Image (tube, rainbow, N blue to C red):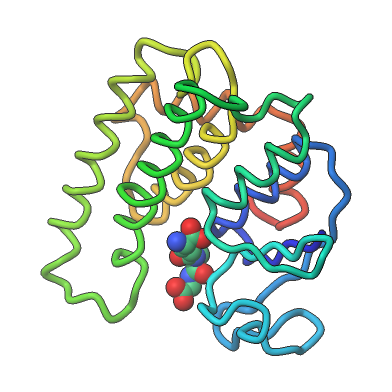
Length: 200
Ligand SMILES: N[C@@H](CCC(=O)N[C@@H](CS)C(=O)NCC(=O)O)C(=O)O
């Protein structure tokens, strides 16, 4: 399998997941500015959306979208227990993956875009904060998003919360979320993935 990534981007989540699942993989870095891979090829030929992550799987198919890739990896390593296999617990985990993807991840996107009008930044940050309050409320009662069980939803949440510092938003405002991020960061898979991507 080959994971296409940009350092510290949302592709960090599947990168950590590959390590959690103990699967064999290669990494290809994509340049944000040129959308060229580290071997000089055009990344849009791999993923026409131009965004990371993309995961090339054994039969040559390319998967995109973080929640889909995370499910694929969890299902490929059932013994690792990275997502509930089926039933209502699976759906609860997918609720979190979708919430992080659509409500949190995509609340960050305009804040990073240089073309976003200045007037949007403060309301955009207020909206992001309102989404984090929902997570804080949950984590103040539970160790992980799925209760007592670590899952790839925690990895995705950790990945996006790393970007708060870039937006001058301190995790100190959300003590349970801060504790959660610190806990996830201690996992060997996370430390290795951050090191490999050259991220703090
Ligand atoms: N919905 C996509 C979003 C992917 C995405 O926005 N990736 C960002 C990095 S976190 C990216 O490639 N940004 C470059 C761009 O938007 O041009 C997913 O879940 O994979």
